[in-house]
Amino acid sequence: MSQSADAIIVGAGVIGAATAFEMAKSGRNVLSVDRNPAAGYGPTSGSCAIIRVHYSTLEGTAFAYEGYFYWRDWADYLQVDDERGLADFREVGCLVMRTAQNDYMAKHLGHCDALDIPYEIWDEDRIRQRLPIYDMTSYWPPKRLSEPGFGEPGQGHVGSAVHFPTAGYVTDPQLATHNLQRAAEANGASFLFNRRVVEILQGQGRVAGVRLDDGSEIQAPVVVNVAGPASAKLNAMAGVLDDMTITTRALRQEVVHLPSPAGYDFEANGPVISDSDIACYCRPEQGNHILVGSEDPECDPREWVDDEDYNRDFTEQWTVQAQRYGQRVPSLGIPSQARGVVDLYDVTEDWIPIYDCSQLPGFYMAIGTSGNQFKNAPIAGKLMASLVDYCEAGNDHDAAPLTMRLPRIGREIDVGFYSRRREINADSSFSVLG
Image (cartoon, rainbow, N blue to C red; front, side, top):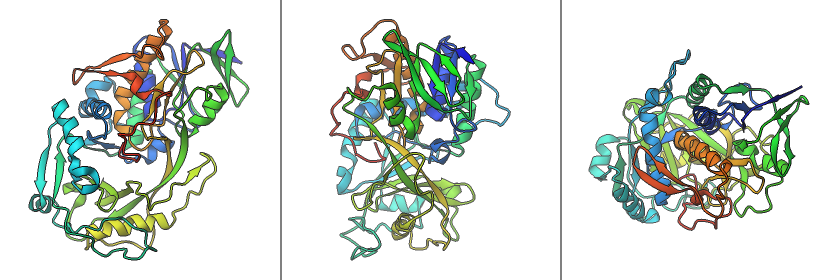
């Protein structure tokens, strides 16, 4: 059995679904293929779904600020009804602790000034007004439980933070992806679930489609790899690894869910928080819980895994993150039974994604996006649609990279910033912070 499409999107996570939506809007007959039973059922479903505007590079900051407006105006962006309702973006703001380790956010604030992104500097008193449960004692450097001095104060206090009002989180990332699927379908796209791509078809020097695990083939002149933690395997199938200086790997991560301290409603009153002093980030979670993740300090081991063969149980890392956050919140109760998420990131060497073409004409990549690109899904979809149009019109993106206008903030970016052939970006945080 064989069918055809103008473009095949491999992967129906949030960025894959956004890419399908944007490419379908441009008039292409788009078919999305995913090995999971529904859109957003892979690592997207375990995403912390934080929407923030601060990044370590100017390009990343511009991309994120552009993305914010689509989440803020979600219904207007989608222009579709969904029988399950629309995802809820809670604009609670983001508070980033200023520490010597992040140079008191000087670089980030320079990017924000260049892009007219609003922010405020909060002193310790203002932080405690919003977060009376917080103890601002410094505990740097972050440690593991087994290390001497864990839980002992460091030097001084964390005396200030940057508050970004244009930030928050999406309560249900899987629902947000379902919304994008419905929007894509309203523009003529179709989705095929519970199917694995086992071969990238080629012919006449370019991509020709895919073969699926049931033996069927789908013919298409364009294939876009948005396969998340399986992206490296798909690139190997396509034979496009040879000219890539930046690659992707699957990284195991644990996220902690903790009850809010007694007497404080973190779900109603808490912002998104990034705290490099204890190397944790957190956000409110439904049921008056707090979601706590690691900011990937040197003391936390990085566990590179096969995307289909890894430990899905909680480990000591869960307790480490919970206890680190407990340093900041002395009244925090840490339950004996671990709750949260164990899932995967798909990351590059510098944690900046690849949005690019490849050495195989017609084969494109939106990969290395896990951990810090959920918020950018709408504009990443637009970028990929523009990139496909640019290259399929005969332009050489490697020699003359696409320049794309970010319509909501009125700024142009060089899409070559996200090239598979770039040098490792020394300005990156080399962590989930981007």
